[in-house]
Length: 500
Image 1 (cartoon, rainbow, N blue to C red):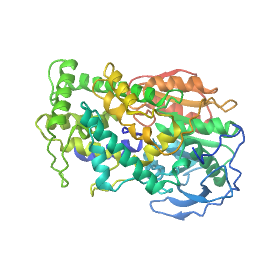
Image 2 (cartoon, rainbow, N blue to C red):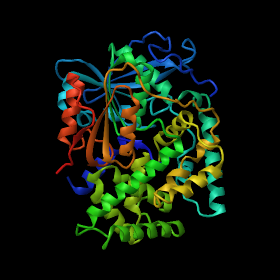
Image 3 (tube, rainbow, N blue to C red):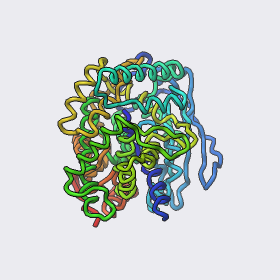
Image 4 (cartoon, rainbow, N blue to C red):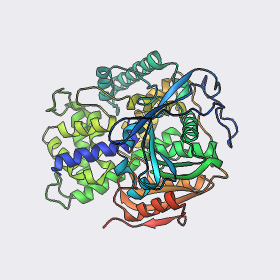
């Protein structure tokens, strides 16, 4: 998928906003759900100071959990010790898949409340295949630029052919550079790593905060190890019951809803580049996308990349993740309507973790690798074309881009290992938080996941943006903090009002 569901991007987006404002084969078997580990002995963690009060370590885990005595890989881990009377550790994951949990934990002082940090060591880790944990790699940076620039809403046979060839080249690069890893980067493997990490930390049961895709990781953990759940907060939930194309279609509709909310607000403000109605504003955005498909916007950054349609869509969706970034989106669209795509391009780079020097983290590559092994995608581009056409009905601006963005999975070289059901019977209560106008993980996914989990408890937030905890809602923060620290479980379906 091209639109990475990650809370880490929100951290970068918040910093950008502040600056701008001046303020298969070989895959491990599932085994029995309860009590089934890889069989590996617990590994002690050798912590070393790594700046700003943090400590870092490496955890050795089996490459293949089906062969616990075989080859090992290392998982990068970081922690910030508790500031008060310690209960244990809280593991955190920002989502993606593909986002660095180590980088996310570096922001622990804003990710978690003072009350939670007082009682828990905050522990972040890069899941296998990500960041500092045997990263999946596919293409050099310049080739990733070309891949990301491909027209992912093709409207001609020639553009479809170019997209197919680009996807095949990308997949060939993944197999050539990371073939040994590709069967072993699924969410179930990462969940087993997380259980080994829990044991190495000395915690009898797991306390966890997962956002976006991190909710899927947490739910799979609970399904594998229900008796080891202490408290799991799953914020911005992914619905594991959906097929991958159903999930993409729902996400596309979520971005359409978020765009409408942005435009309704924009039209009340003096610096809004649009006038009239939400419909007329959407028509102008559709026209902008059509024009960038024919003639890219200019770019004032040093690399001078042309800002074509795909970069424009990425830049458009990024500020929709966070209401606080809406002023940046108004400015970016004002510039874009005049032919300047620089700010939109900077927004796109934040979402896919492209750095100013032109290099990338491996977020995009890990995202593809994990998604392709976690779910069974169609093997024909014709199926993607049909899904893209169908998406035009409910998501005319974002649907084709998001549907076609998963095309590499059609050519993936290893067999997927999807989980058919996630219910975690016997687990302690699990808190699922849903934001009503979340663009990337629509609210209906949170409702569905809470229903699927045997002990799921839904928290409903009337809000905008991606994820809810620590986004400004005192109601959500209080409920989550009381649950994490005191194991106080709110009433299922409790409602948190819109921030005034």
